[in-house]
Length: 408
Image 1 (cartoon, helix red, strand yellow):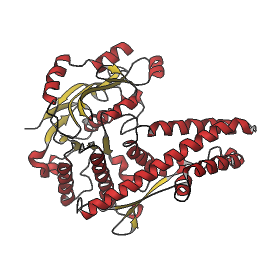
Image 2: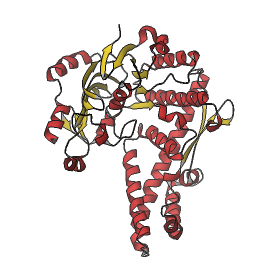
Image 3: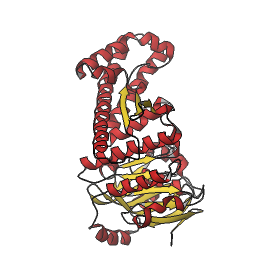
Image 4: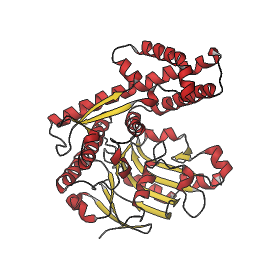
């Protein structure tokens, strides 16, 4: 089953590949998807789309499959995608295997990106999801060398009022855009912490058995915290530049800060001292952590604090519409930052039900910002009229019962 799944990922439409590569030689500076093929993914038995670099609007009733399309695009980067669903749950009724294949004009030029899952439970457990880049098997992290995506979904509407873990995950996704090794550091920290927690649960008292894990946690934890602090500072500068240039004025500017035991310490201490102090803290607090059943302090407990700058009010106290506007403003500022770092190549934007809670003025402002960035934004909505302000600047598609067609 692995051979079948990986073959369909890496060799979809061979003749189309030749034709499309010739067409892609005139790629625009932005990152954009020109072909997308899904097989047995969510409610799609099979679908194939071809689009240009302009924004794409997917309209249709709830449940038609609009979000499934942009979820598939989010899987063309490392991680679990915008819904964070287990890979086995992405398969449609045609079996346990699924594939997503795309022709992308990426950071290094035209490239075929594919990912999918084999069908047998034992094979899935052993292999995880498969990734093919230009037909060659690669680790999932290699996808990030070609494509960068930012997204906003309805589930993020409660980002500022929900659990700190959601804001932390949001921040980590932004950091990873600039640091390809960041997710690896997070994984190393989490594995070391799990080993330490296991020792605590097993009532181990031998200090020597903790030291290697705690030193690893200190080294990777401080690197994680430092990357977060640096990104927040750079993003705050980008927001200030946008304010001065009167860009995105329809969206309130955000005040940002990242708080946590390590992030706070880095403001006044050298990184090496923060590492030593954190390792010593972990050693001192083994008893309290054992009683709590977890490691209580570290970068896994940090939080991203967001405020409405003009109102000098925490984002969590703002109205629903203001919170949505703040989030959009943050994403646009980060997209600007990515574009500046990538020589003008704006990231792919995936905006699910983006017009909800936006008045007509802010809708038009968002469309103008997307046009200014020159990015390919994939937007979904139930009402095509909400996107009328895009005019001829976008490609409109109708999604109905897992079928997709261009709107007349």
